[in-house]
Image (tube, rainbow, N blue to C red; front, top):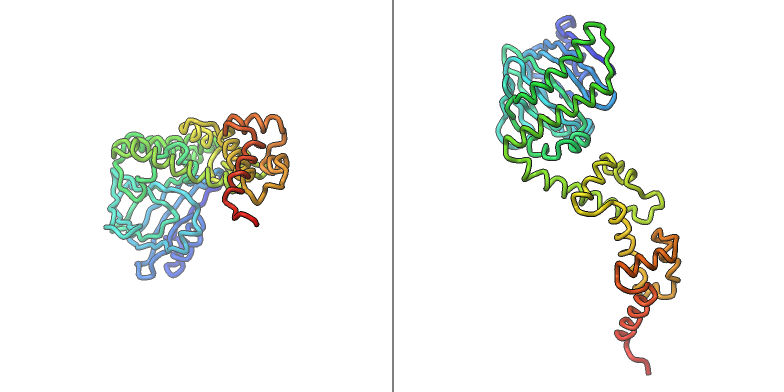
Length: 330
């Protein structure tokens, strides 16, 4: 856990913007518009080991930008803007500006470019971010909430209270289990997102859509690595940026286990190879081995169960059909 503090009022006016950007830009902060008045900002930023961030900042009136190239270099996180005082406007798309004020939450996809204006006399705000993929595991209906102004519900109040406790404990010299703190922070963040989605009537509609989208991406990755001997739920989960537990839950909702799905895809691939006329001279045992079937008898029984015939019979039938399409020889 790392903490950073800055008070630009103690820095020469000509150097304030550069000092502030040097601190916040590597952590996802935007750059100051050069037309803004001399910056005054007090920031306390804590980085947690699992990628989350808790920061408390007071901004003087100013305009900040996050460009597209800058956005692509940002962590794939979601940041909640919890306004404690003052007002700001933010725009991360082609639509109208979103106004932030006490009583509202704004969810910022940090890789998305945009512009934010902090209005006079200044804005007091808490920023709380968490990795996007980890959040989706707990709150799959979060996507429609991004770039939206959400009511400050009791669940968001719990997120704020927990985030503030991090700085309070540090000020008191109390030890903090940063890993446990971050896990709870993410759980509270996800619970608040789920509540917001329910309030907007989006949870039931979008949770299924998000799950199907994720499952499709997982299945595509399985196809890429289908004959990889290191193929496993853990490896595919890592390649998709999710946990193996969440991956298995997606397959369970699809009424199939990860193992059964992979075996079915391997059987489909080896079946296509066996009935391919161009491979008719390749031993079936070799094709089965290429697809990860090391036990010949088990492979045969699984093939028969899936296709209702033995591998050799499937090949023989395919050859007969292929020969029937060939021109007659004189």
